View 1 (cartoon, helix red, strand yellow):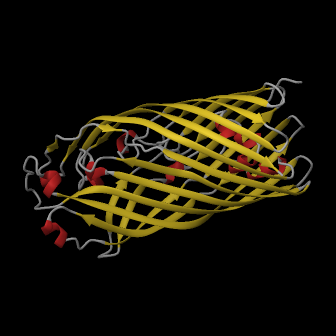
View 2: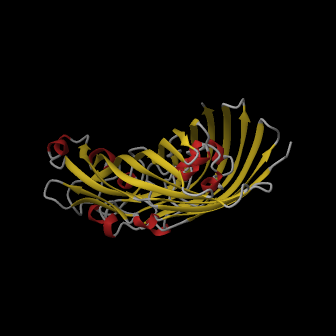
View 3: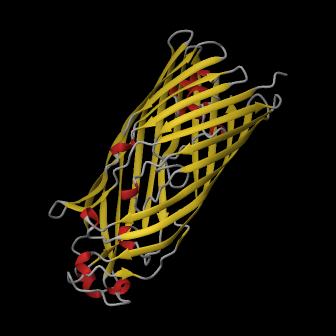
Length: 435
């Protein structure tokens, strides 16, 4: 049998997750794609899961197909040397406790499912459920940067209905409607007491800080469009555009304090709103089967994440503003696949993932940094109906520093400096069933 070697390459500007990629994009919607570090995902179209990257891909799946994928994301991120300072109006003293932050990034399992149905030789439909964005960072309530964040939890789910039409023998057009649900919970410390009163040693955590919890959710619509051009039986090109989705989260803010007097003063428990925009992604790629070569580039317009503003219903105005000022960032990957025999295929991939976070606005909620990917995977074709995939990725994150000056919108939180480093492991299992 013919031995095939697949080479893949990918360049990406995007947002991604502290748990797996720069920012908080969760790219792991296909275990097969993960084996190649997601190189060639737009033009590859190996199974229904690739429709997440290009809805036109479902045209290449014969009959009826369903793809199940699950990825465990295990982060080993450590922080050290955290030094926090009280806001200037409380004296600006340094906090000298809980300077270490061990494993602030929680372990999660990311599931996804996609299905496609061939209507006829020129038309296919599909549906997918995915979680393309997410974030969990969790610190002790008494750590030195508590005013800047103790818990950050963001979950975003997409339900996408897709349609692909073979317009000509060579060109397939695809599109879909995306229903996106976003749910967020943020916690942090809030100082209270008489302005300009110096903080007595050892009493800050117990009597001068309340724990604020902000939570909200929203469901809004977006879309995805794509095209797949099959130049020859061995060469094809893909392009897709996923729209941004503008959310207006609605929820509430509440306070908890160990001080009875402060509990009596909690008049600011109220309804809140916050705007959140998930970015648009433009992706294009090529595939050539001469020993199968793939290449791909993607741009995510993450510069739209300028700040996180929480507005309150009482008296109007802003409760909290956090400067973000993220930038567009590149993701580059290269990969290879080797068809061992009719049943087994091996995959490999390398990637460089540039962070969208600016050094001067990096926060402990998303202490993001540049990172390097090392991926491998295997496919086992059990029979004509059932195929299994497995993948593993090791991600090395560069050192990152938080250096907030406690000025501007951070004036009420105080200054904070901290250092982070870490590695992330991705373990994926998937199955594809044809019927």
